[in-house]
Image 1 (cartoon, each protein chain N blue to C red):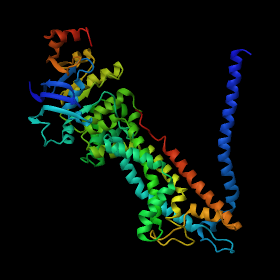
Image 2: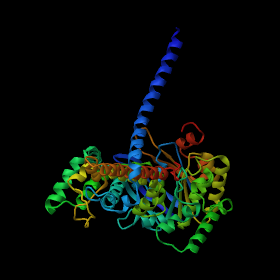
Image 3: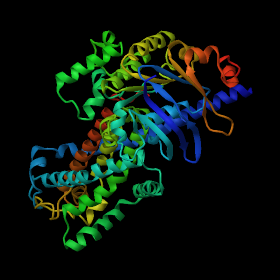
Image 4: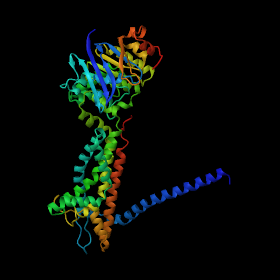
Length: 280
Length: 258
């Protein structure tokens, strides 16, 4: 064989190998979705979304309290993490030059990599121990801490991408600096910020470890932010390891709801992106 | 010569590096003054000192005075935001705000500063400014399209309209036509001649023909290898370009360097 033929054969072989690897990667994802839909779709009845969990041995019931609990915890976490994260990201992008900024940037990168269970322990020590009870609030604190570095860094990147000349143009018109940032620079970075925020929400929606010793879980409706609450990832865990068939099916159903939620968030993030990005 | 704007012993720094030294120039009212010189001679820096845009860059510093109507713009009591409304600026590359429509771009200065909020008043300002910038006829039917949808030359005139909308007294132009084709350049130059009836204009340009064609006064700046930019010669454009006094000016305008 000539050298060229050998190289062609090698190239062809590698293309096939790469293709198989792609297939494997996509296949795993497809298999997860397939199993969850196959096992969980049957659980998605109207009562699944509206009723409380039924006692053992009684059929029916739902996981409405877990859906509501997750919604509450995620909403409170977002309420805290989004404004703080966006403002910190703007600071880093526009004013962050000194040692403080480098430190903040480094810390938020470290924070992104901290295992979520460690953040759960932190929230436990910070909120649960002093208040002497598990609570939705403590779970929100844990999730907000997980969201924060994601939002900070994506906001920073998005704002940094807006050309400096845009902000200078605004300043040269005699627009005060803070208005130039909020009303001119920030809208240019909007798509990136929205995407980062939605991905941060999607990331924490499925977190279960930090909820174990904060939200704790419950079989009833939550009684406000200072009491323990059910949450989707917790109920999935508890039901999945239970010996009862109908509970196990509820776990699959809960997993399906979670996957659909995360899928929709990712879809929304993708739709937010191409809208009127800065030309230069 | 009625002086509107002048600098007095102006030095500008980037960190420890001195970019321009000891500049004293009078800019005449309702005239076009061109600043020419090779790249890196500090002419853009000098221009940015005039409306205190130099200090927007981190670690920069200015010494000396810029005087507008008898008031030193570098007095501690002067609000740079307010003075930038009196001294407008057009940049080298057109920089329309990408998330705003054509109309929103034009009225951005008055609207975002909260001066004018009434819709009909904003519409009137938009039309007046676009007419002044000779852009109205081209965009009057698409005021609600994105500012970035226009051609390069139109975008630059949009930026001029945007600067005019806040009704400044002085207009600073930093190589406004260097990124444009000859037709668009010609339109901008015609526009400048029109605008000098109302405004005092200072323009930085690389293009000597442009300075000769449309300016009344010209300042030639030059920086050495290790020395900051200085004003070599200043005078009537006609005399600078025909009978320069300084041999360095002559070398530059005859194309011997730069």
